[in-house]
Length: 489
Ligand code: GLN
Image 1 (tube, rainbow, N blue to C red):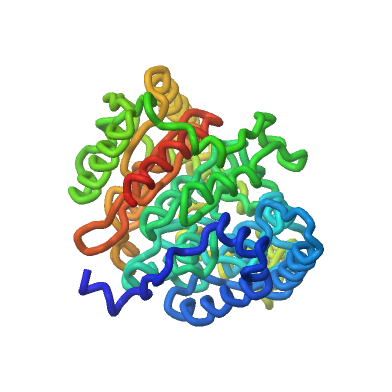
Image 2 (cartoon, rainbow, N blue to C red; image 1 turned 60 degrees about the horizontal axis):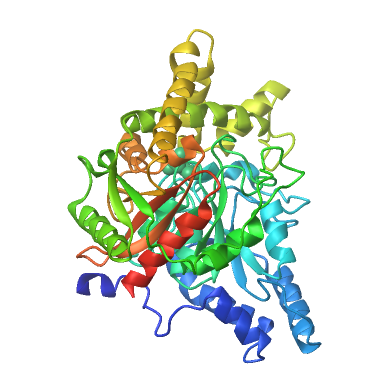
């Protein structure tokens, strides 16, 4: 612990502000939304030079919204659910008029003319949108080191990565530079950085939250979800974000329960599956011990623990990296120098303009994935790679559906290790891909999950436990995570 002290952000003296506390403080007149937003911008000025979580601040919009909320409070009007709550947005979600880079040079200068649905829903609920958060380029990565704008440093240990790809979103919450943030998760990008930074990160079921206005990486896997200090905050945010959207044909018509109210129900009697496959070789012993302690805490709360088997787990990383790259190669075809952002100068023809723009605009990892994805989709290889991976995806989904016939949720580590050092895996893409081993399965199966803080390593690094739940059963996942959170107090 002592070793990290000089190298990490000073821990806040008071507990970080939650959504409920922020809203109450504004409603009671103890503070106002303008003062609160100002104090978050001050923290950003003080801390972000060390962390580098923010790519752009949207001060004008934030202050206008804060003033609007203060007027409502003054007039005694009922305040919306997120009135005055300062929130940051991962830079793959568009906000009208604000830069949207997706961590890439190729989108430099692009100013989207509309808000993503998730952003619009936060705005309509009264949130104060502080700005855009750093991430791996097009959300491809597990460490935030693939951002074209430089890496994010983990606030808990500045020489470590915050995880990825939503590294800025996790770090901003951990360093108290926002009450909550939005991230996206295609193969772990909410849960893994949440575990590395010691915050809560929620992966909603596929279809639960609209993807409209999300710069697509892999459309069948991408999800939008919240980062927060507490499980209750994540529940409140999901309540605002969830629900059908006519602008996203894959958004689900499922009813949206009151997630925050669902936290009150006791976890007693819930059946928790423990899959052997997630406690195998490569798991850091301290992470294993922390997750075992979390299992004990759930048992103490009256849950029962059951062994389950997810036998196709060993194929998950390979399956993910075939399907995600295939979809990425197709989604990223739209960045051609014509419609968005960067256009290479001095091109002699249209073809060379396309080539030069893509060569200058995309980073190394993005190019690697476009090449891989194009390869697995090409005639002659399609059956061997893409079609096969789709078949294995079905088997992985069936593993979960089968397990969920006997258990209500599944407990695993979120990541095999705590946060690694900056630069530690940058020369070895395979080692980096293996950091996703416990998270990609939920995206392939379409199910929901959460990472909840579950203690620290002996070096003081946060460890996260992952709870996976049935399709559209976020309420159970949140309830269990809340139980884990209570046991940590
Ligand atoms: N780390 C995984 C990848 O690089 C997942 C990224 C994500 O969820 N966006 O693809």
